[in-house]
Length: 165
Image (cartoon, rainbow, N blue to C red; front, top):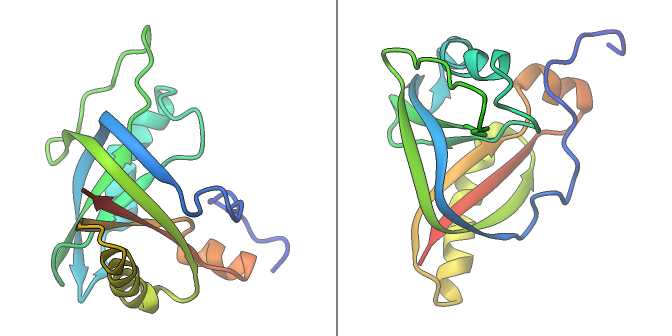
């Protein structure tokens, strides 16, 4: 297994832990992933059609931030960070993609374990914040590695982004 290719950079534990982020019109490319009971069916295809052009244009300078808003058992909206850079033209978006902007306060929490626990962690995080009197609008998921890389690293990190008031 040590010679296996890795497509996802190893997550630096603590780099997104317990942060409060204030975003003012942070730009993302929004696309949709088909799911079967929250299991993504075409995530790679969506990343190729919406993410790859951004990488090729040099609009991801750091490790990309991809957020998933798991709205139903059947689909998730995926938000791919767009690091706009003056002088670099944003490539045309795929017909199924659009621009989205996030403004507001987001609180993060790191979790490690199997993907199946993500919704349990989200519920616990929501309960924890609401017990402190913090209103949670929604929780977005940031899966730090693909399943193959999680297996290679021996850890599966997921960062929760709670949009709060």
